[in-house]
Image 1 (tube, rainbow, N blue to C red):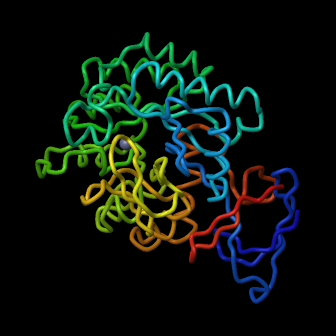
Image 2: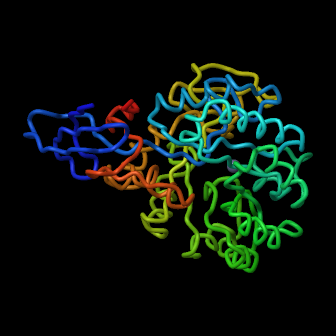
Image 3: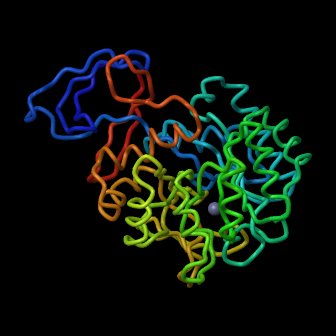
Length: 369
Ligand SMILES: [Zn+2]
């Protein structure tokens, strides 16, 4: 397949030949021949809860729901994603894992789009604030037996887990998970300096949506944001949707962590992609605004994310003061590196999943090659 576009790294107008995902030729064109869009690696989002009214966390999740969520994500340029299951009963999480695993078993092609599953919880802080929207009645302490049963239901596909290191047995569990080759993320936490340090020593690799899933008011110096920011060993995911962080916080996190450690996730909820309106979801009335903001009705409180990874790139460029290439890197190459999966670089001879991206509109489209 021949694609005329601009190279996302340098803006050069090019004609690229792609055969079965492999870049076989890149030829320069005169700049006037191509204005938009940009050719880039497809997004890899490590935290997708659902889309279009369908949730991976639904107790009635079906194989066709999994296909539908992946297909919706693909229309936003997301070529790879980690379905994310949040705090719930043992059985509910087991059902989600087993359904996703079965979907991939029955359609081997999906193994590329879903290279793993992220379990966010249930071993999180029980405190209001850091707990976020995770239901208190299902928050508990780490249990290797429970995890082994989940991993069995998932047919070994749990590749990432977000936990709060301060919970009882948390540090030992991080060591154990790391030995199981599960990527451990710190999140929904009120851990102190020592607990963050021990979590990193035990193998924690990243922070989950830093700046969210945390108390609304914090001690000015002794708090988990500074402690995680200062740990050079930790990568860091953020939700740059324009609502979850202020511009100053987003820019500061990026500057402190450095580009190579930044990961963009949209953390799409089941209401991502639905029409604006009032929805009955998670036992609450939820308002979806036309700009993609999702709030508890008649309150300023966010109730998850309503946009996909593609909509985060213009925000990162503007508020995070990143150029296009660097903004896309946080949503493609960096998550792949965290997960120890192939990085897709737009160079001759490289294989990958590719997209066309328009940073003005934020529109993205996967290339079927
Ligand atoms: Zn979360």
